[in-house]
Image (cartoon, rainbow, N blue to C red; front, side, top):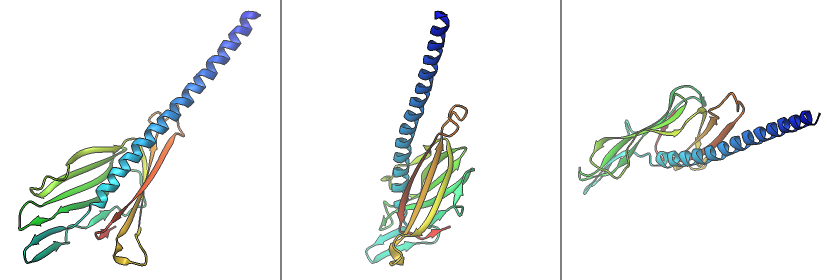
Length: 194
């Protein structure tokens, strides 16, 4: 009888330990994932806010090229499959035809990952860091996009692009409901096409 009681107590203790361990692991995952996602979205926000046109600064004035250098945002409000999220350019001014640069940027949802690419498409400027298939977030379940005027009373103040990213736990069998959601917004001062 004592052996049976001891066996029940040990079994009960094991279940409590296992349950608390799983709960701790889930909480630890959520905290780590939230921090990584927040940092990744802050990085993307800063890159989006650099969106600019191509410009040539000369002694007799400045020429700004707008055609082909607009911010393109996916028309969908919510993305859950592979898709381009946004693409834009960052223009570093050309001074008297020299030293400037145009950088092409794209953010896409690819195989459950939020991936960022940034390449130099024109010029020789090397002030911007280049990225090739940089994974901002993995296990992305969905991305919600929003676009509105930054200041409704001032139409030329730019646009506010908001995006919310939902990450699911990689072990959906043990943690089917585990999700982390983070959002951010970027003020963009170039024309946005949606």
